[in-house]
Each structure stands twice: as structure tokens, then as C-alpha cells.
Length: 137
Image 1: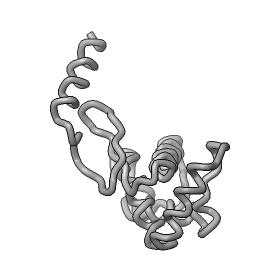
Image 2 (image 1 turned 60 degrees about the horizontal axis):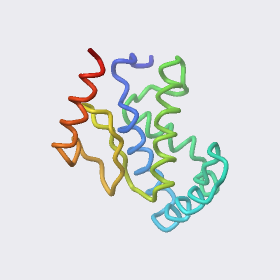
Image 3 (image 1 turned 135 degrees about the vertical axis):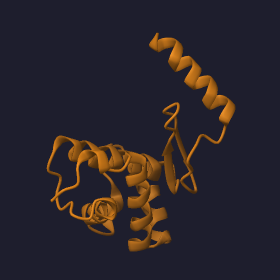
Image 4 (image 1 turned 30 degrees about the vertical axis):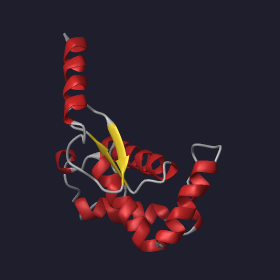
């Protein structure tokens, strides 16, 4: 039985788990090589993590760390989550970062060496939230 969509992780949390498992699987040296190859890759659909392992299995392990009975994507929500996390992870690798965070308040993407729970610049986040609220009304 697959857990419901409401129990699925956020895409950035899944991307970070995937990146952590990928580094563990292929090692930091090879991870840095993947980052360099991805940065030089002209085709956005290609990720060089597959040069070092079956990255789909690593992503599946990341998903299963949140949803232990998830074997394959079964719904549009599963596919959307998998693809969103994959795209965030590749973007993170292109930047040579170790983690990505999407602020739940303002939606800003941030890359760095670790995952964090809020925007690092709280004042800028508050300004972005206020601007988003103005546009909404």
C-alpha cells in the first residue's frame, strides 16, 4: 500500500535526500565529477550521475526513506514529485552545491552546503512574501 500524497515529502527534501544518498553511493570525489560534467552538459535532460551508478535506484531509495512502501511512481503526484526532486537535484549539482532549499514562506530557491529550514536572509524573505501578497490581491 502506498502512503497518500499528503504524506509525500516536499520536493526539496526529497532532492536533498537523493543528493546525500548519491554522495554516499559514489563518493564525494565522483560527486564533484558529476557536478563538473553536469555544469558542462549542454543538454538539460542529461545527468551524469548515471555515469557512476543507477541514479534511478538511488532516487527510489530516497523516496522509500520517506514512503517505505513506494516501489514505483503510481500517480501523477508521484511522477510530479519524482521529476521535481530530480530537477532540483540536477540544478543543485550544476551549481556544485550539496543541498537545495525552497522557502515555504516565499518560494525562493537557495543552494548551499546543507539544507536549512528558512531563508537565510529573513528580511529579504519578508519583503518577497509581502510582494507576493500584494500581487495576490
